[in-house]
Length: 339
Image (cartoon, rainbow, N blue to C red; front, side, top):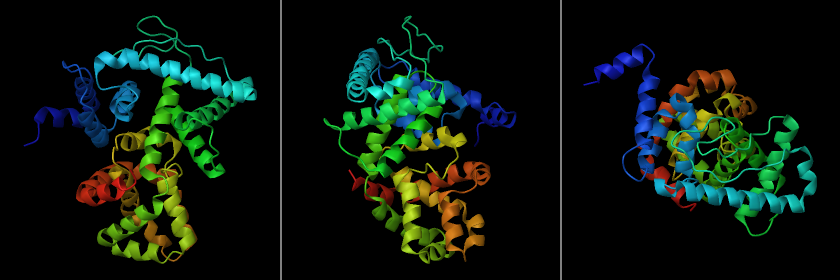
């Protein structure tokens, strides 16, 4: 039997209040540890749109940037700040020209409060570096972050392809749209997400594509047959847009936070793959009119009109979770092979 109070609040537009309280209860429980698994389940089901100010705190827990033990938050934050400055200093020495369009980064360690601090200060009075605002400064900061991430991943600056760097650049910019506090949080959220993404999905798009087309045959045989008729080049474009670029072309920038809520909460890759299947199933009505045009069908699935995505996002989100639950064992088994 549905809860009358929750139903009533939802009808009059106050559902977000209840969700915000639920999220705060998970973050501010009386124990000395945050239940990351329950936090991930909450983020998957409803996202953090009702508590935007807590989104970065939630993401840091889910990605492992912040430890689950509350008494270790301050120590870990200090370590992250020091590590950030070490990486920044190393890259600055190797690429001094990158600093010309970047404001100086000057931040000392601070404790991470239960709630985000006001812009420009923290609970203990430490100064927080503001995010760069000028386009030239943002682009230069992204260039710095890419090199810092390469150094973070390996003890030496390994050479990456232009394609890999382009994907990392877009991902870094998308995290910039969602992070509102400081450059340190921006970098570590981007770095930890990218590292997990590469561990789960690097060079596995062919495996994912095969299993998803097989599942699509069960969900929507007509659409499966239409995609099966596409040439290898078109299928490769779809696989790349989803499993290499991580939906960065599929969704408009206005939906960065909503999409990242799903992907950040995904610990084993099952949601990541279910989202691709959800895209095909959810957009099937629009796709049907492109059945005889391979180029148009491929372009639509790689870059559907923003208005279509926004109008059907709620349906896509719910469909993704349904498909994940239905095929969890299969999707988990496939994605776990990448680890």
